[in-house]
Length: 194
Image (cartoon, rainbow, N blue to C red; front, side):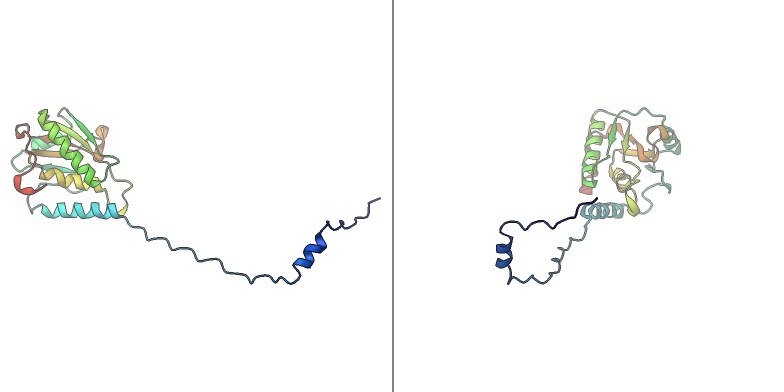
């Protein structure tokens, strides 16, 4: 047979507590404090990169370059033959140095390219590879470093030609760069200010 349940005996001092709080009135409910507004996201580095690419692209004169459209990057100085560019595209020149720009922002990449080409010329390299990436995570602005490298290399006097690499060497995420070994340390025209 089930036992009858008895209410628990009041704890000692409970009556005293009730007497002490008899006149207390509950506070009216308060709305939660407003959340502090978050600052609007600012893509400062992305905007700076875009401005730099735009500024670099505006420096190029019309008809100055021989470029094909599409994902593949191609460039040659006007005095060079199409045959040299074809051989470069096929990867027929030994690659004597490589620079990987992954993880760098635009200003860092620009300085890395400058230093790399200077070293390549000091070592009298004829053909080097620059890995700029395909920009798959760059969003609607496109591959920032790829576009920037495309513009920067055209301003290096020592760069004779460049072409997107073969698939086994990075495809459209890398380029072969043909250098003028007789150029020595001078990479830029004196008036370019770069």
